[in-house]
Amino acid sequence: MPETFRFQSEGLQLSSHLEIPDSEEKVLPGVLLVHGFPEGPGGGANSASTLPELARRISSEMGFVTMAPLLRGTGESEGCFSLSGWLTDVQQAVIELKNHPRVGQVWLVGFGSGGAISICAAAKTSEVQGVGALAAPADWSAWAASPKRLLIHARRAGVIPDPNFPDDFDSWSADLKLISAESDISRLSGMSVLIVHGTEDDVVSSLEARALSDAHGNTDMRLIEGAGHHLRHDPRAIAILLGWLDKQRRVNK
Image 1 (cartoon, rainbow, N blue to C red):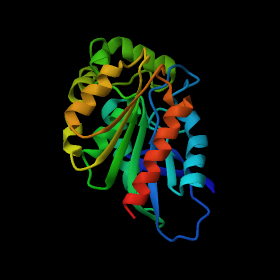
Image 2 (cartoon, rainbow, N blue to C red):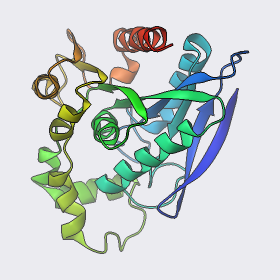
Image 3 (spheres, rainbow, N blue to C red):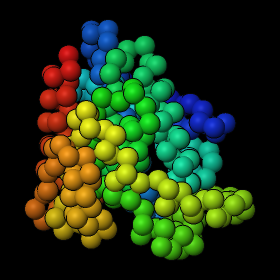
């Protein structure tokens, strides 16, 4: 049963897509799907617009209450993109999903930058049971090397609609160095972590998947031969993700 769910994050109203399984079970597992950075005004293959269909599938086939939030600056959600803002939004979304009356345990799954942010968010809360990161960067050093170019790209992509944002460019750009999935993933040592990456990813090198896996020490890492960056649309990646979620549900019952 799909619905639009709205919640507050730092005073901003954010929108999300929520799917609740048709199940007689009173308490169900929950999973948060976190989108990546849009490639242009239309969003692109890793954008939030592609996630409701996946949310529906995970809900109906796997029995998870599934939530796909639109992080600040995207879709109908208020605000403008910042890395720390997106991290706060994901942390708040975890709280909102966990507080749903039918949700017991919560997992995080993210694509592209959303995968890295999911790792960082999980490191800052005790409410997450596991994380799946697909095509995720180990850090944002590529963005940090040219923050003004990122700002221009973010404006063109529509995630910074306010021409006067950010008030403090130095603080906004500092996030790109201070927030790092590679630094945070070691704090998930007791947690199940799935890392999926394509060997032909020309946006985020598969070496970054290895860096994340090495920093954690015990991930379930899967490299998909010949796959590119847009794993949301690769049936092999989605099959791996669904299999991992099924195992998580069975092991944690």
